[in-house]
Length: 281
Image 1 (tube, one colour):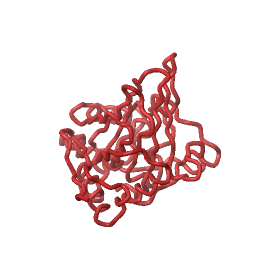
Image 2 (tube, rainbow, N blue to C red):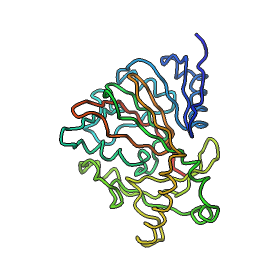
Image 3 (cartoon, rainbow, N blue to C red):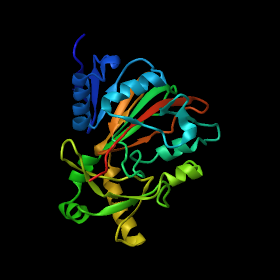
């Protein structure tokens, strides 16, 4: 079988992996190729067939150790490292909280002391149209900031929380045990990618509450200014799903969001795995 090929997308981030045998992904040579592609392109798309939760967990080992989904009710039966994300738009325009939260730009797990390195999302059932996932290159966002702004924010730290007044929608409810597992945490506002040394703006519109050492008004003003740059389309790529796709993205230097624009009554079902990460610096 031919070696996997990394084909960069014509976009601010992303690459497509062709000729990949998913069962061989965890071999040292292939895993090294995949992780290099992830660090360089921040997002990789792997087309293929639908996988069982066990197959997906096995495939994810190419990127590191899979961590357990925080919210117990989302875990996939006997494979607690795989969560099932079900979103259905109702006739009245309502949907579940997971989809509502995912509509705004965010990075996974920033409310944890050691946020996930990467996320794998696998399409199990997709709507007839809509439901694309969008990604933002936070290296290019940081690079696009004025020099004075970069100097101002380098070294600043921010509080990330499971729930914050800055979020447009409230998160899923936690059990008392889950609350105890997710105290507020502090992270750098600008983090350094451990594999490439590049700086990235570390934002999360759902979880970033405030900047340390600033009052609420000053903190909100600066975060809004930074968010304005991150919302610019020149930093974005939208992935239109086909059945069986696996998309892997680097949470250390990206944000993402979903379009909740698919037909009412149609399901959008994804399997997700989070890969254990390190403390941001």
